[in-house]
Amino acid sequence: MIPFISRASLSEQNTWITHLSAAMPDEVILPFADLTAEQKQQCDIAIVANPDPEDLISLPSLKWVHSVWAGVERMMHELSSPSFSIVRLVDANLANTMSEAVLAWTLYLHRDMPTYAKQQVKKSWAQQPMVLAQDRRIGVLGLGELGRVSAQRLVANGFSVAGWSRHSKQIEGVECFHGKDGLALLLKQTDILICLLPLTAETKGLLGQQNLSLLPVGASLINFARGPIIDDDALLSKLERGELSYAVLDVFAQEPLPENHPYWRHDSVTVLPHISAPTHPISASEIVATNIKQYRLTGNIPHAVDPVRGY
Ligand code: NAP
Image 1 (cartoon, rainbow, N blue to C red):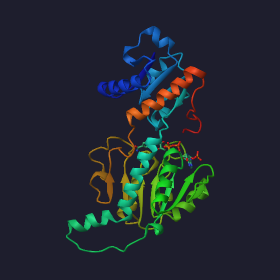
Image 2: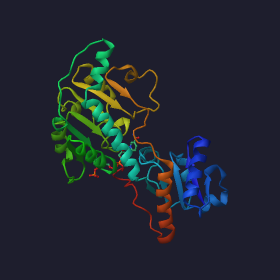
Image 3: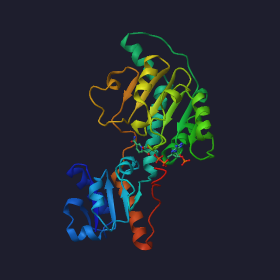
Image 4: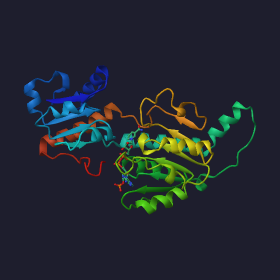
């Protein structure tokens, strides 16, 4: 028996339980609310999607939880030193979906769509200077599961691509930077900055006044990672002053974005409702099933999030 623990609506939970049960017919998967006191004492695995931390703490035998989402920042933040491992979703389909969103919005910025949209409102017929993809410098922050595939897709589409990570890396066609000095070097040579970092104590507020000032005048930003990595006031002031030209934002410090937030009506901001890489329930359920079957066979817990590093 494996509980499915989530703060999602009951119908969303039932959809997940249906897909997970189809992927592992040998397991009984139950909503947390249906567990008996005895089952709570026994269960060693849980499958989670934004769980209430109190529910997890009420399971004394829990060894590990498998998230059906790739980002587990909220769970890491809400659970201080959990006694169980947290395994997040690593799905090639998700990385592909993210790289598609990265390519789509990079092309949007590269081909000056925001400018042409503003021109149309004014009935202005004006041709912007043409920039070849190879001359457009893209900087990708985070070269993990999502950043690496996104950077490679941009390279395959002819862009000049650099990336930044904590450790040094080699990715064909991508100029790789790492560490604090590496960040400054990357920012100084970036026309379109794409954020695919996890939210950790180190990345919170990373894109604030100081680092955003290193970008060339007129650069644009795409944030598909987590809202608090950006200092919203710093970004808004850079956009107001024309030092940055545009921001495509899919993630926010508060979601849904409050109605009175200035991003909603800013003509140099695109607001997206956290849709750049949604989890695909069938694909995710198969990956969760494979990991759980392997655990049942070997007792090995899959690679888990490092609680100290935060990702
Ligand atoms: P990941 O595989 O853990 O990769 C994280 C990358 O960030 C790694 O390259 C890591 O460097 C780098 N990094 C972390 N901390 C750093 C620091 N302090 N300095 C420099 N580099 C640092 O994560 P992922 O699967 O690619 O996902 C990234 C994030 O995307 C998630 O955490 C989540 O917030 C977000 N996400 C968003 C959506 C959406 O729909 N908007 C969907 C899924 C995920 P090393 O490689 O050197 O360790």
